[in-house]
Length: 249
Image (cartoon, rainbow, N blue to C red; front, side, top):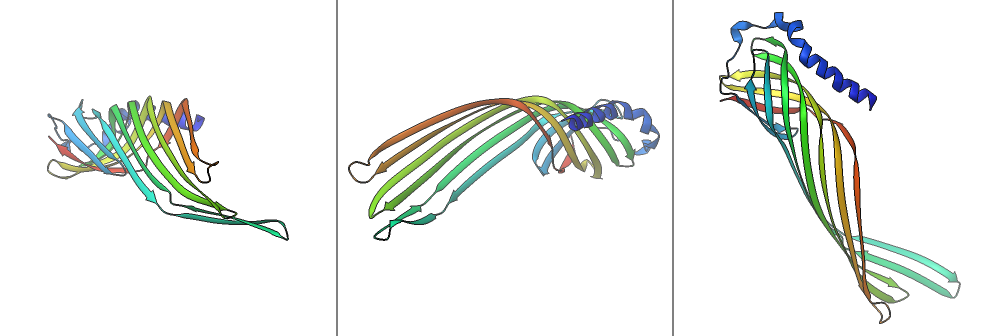
């Protein structure tokens, strides 16, 4: 925690103090004028879309959103067999045959507003870093079905287990980025960057379990169980390298 906070603080100091230190490296003949701003779209390492507006030759602002979506569907089979004995004349066995089926969907959106400073520039390539606030919101749902039959001592009982869960997370905190950007052709460029965030989150989750079973007349019924939890705390993460394109408007 201390090391991460120190890294964020260091990036902030570098962001606001680097202009004078590196000003002699700029190639003024290659300075670009984006009076109507620039659109930045990241697609490798994470999805993001941002609007960039110039503040000066060495600084600009960026506002935008990061988006993510995950979907998974899984099914299969599970078989188990156990053998036990209580005496030489009494042999008992249990078998279990299960066909699990699971589906999950999750979504996340991160909104950020960053002040970005150029650190150094040579012709059409420049190094930059930035910092600012981020708001994040994510939600997800998952369902699972576990039908199975249990056989013990020649008696079979059929079970149907269902699990429905959902979660929501809201967070806010600072984010810092470090990246490099290059102009490939007129008005089109490429960028690569990493980010470090420290987000304070509020999370709520709920689960509902339902089990129905049927077998001998004395072993039939339904069982319901529900639970919910509420958590809060810090989530500190370092993103992977994210690559995208920039388009001058």
